[in-house]
Length: 234
Image 1 (cartoon, rainbow, N blue to C red):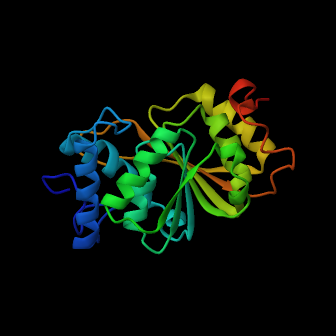
Image 2 (image 1 turned 45 degrees about the horizontal axis):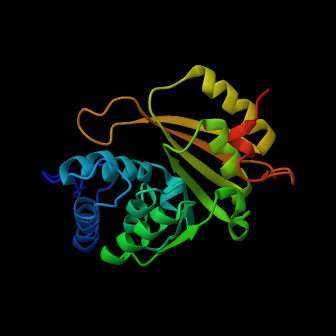
Image 3 (image 1 turned 90 degrees about the vertical axis):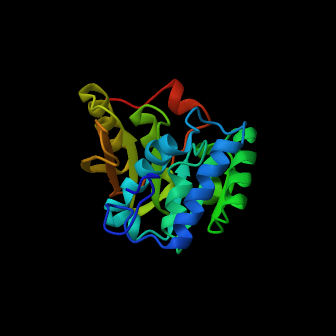
């Protein structure tokens, strides 16, 4: 990382970003700082570079992410990890799936200002995004919901062989056990839990990676809100 927190050649998972890509990421930081309606409490550039950008780009450690042609960011919020990954992977088509209209409008402003052209904002709940069903190479989710709920959102959207990357903090054995039960019902299998250190001093950062190994039963997705109200379990 440089002093501004942006990746530089040879510095980690975001190494190799061009000057143009670094400029786009700097523009993202500028929008976060300037836009009083940005849906995040972390807007100061130095902190946002670490807590948002570096944390998002940690997923570039995964081959499945680097090779993806279609990526969907569920509950995109302020645009992370989706916008950062779209900048780093210009050949990928990235969908920012967000249900709140105010956040959707912010995402559009952000991508326009940073000239991120390989994204589209999908203003819909994940359960209701019919166009995305069964065709995503990678689903990413960061601070979205309890893990069994995230698995249920993601599974119907993934193609066979696709992967979910779920950002988590400190590991929780009980939640992971519940997630394993949900995964078995959804055609998913845990591939790895990778501990990352996206910036100096970062602690308890983990990427939980699930692969879609079987077809998701046709009863999924359930109607909007059902996954949170009645999460899958054993």
